Amino acid sequence: MLIALDHPHRDDIEIGELLVVVTVYAANIVQDVRENIRNLVGGRMTHYERLIQAAVEQALADLEAKATAKGYAGVLGVKISHPSVVDGGVEVVVYGNGFRMRNAE
Image (cartoon, rainbow, N blue to C red):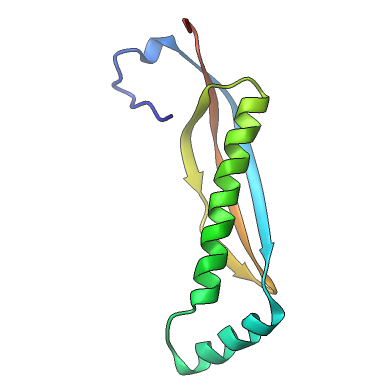
């Protein structure tokens, strides 16, 4: 749940700690070689696109689980770092501040 700064109930929100999740997905070595060849001739690198998408989705799910485990109602200001393809995989860093509702019913 995201709440805008001009939200009428923003005084009911207690902002908590910064929550950080790092997700690294390994690439399939065969598909990695194919993507490196594709990089030489040009074209979409669909294997890496799918790998990055899966890593981002997993990182967001892990951030939500981390917030819930710490008793937060959600995360404010979620940022996704530039997912990067590293040797043999994909790295994604996701972060934001946990929050609680002060007058939760």
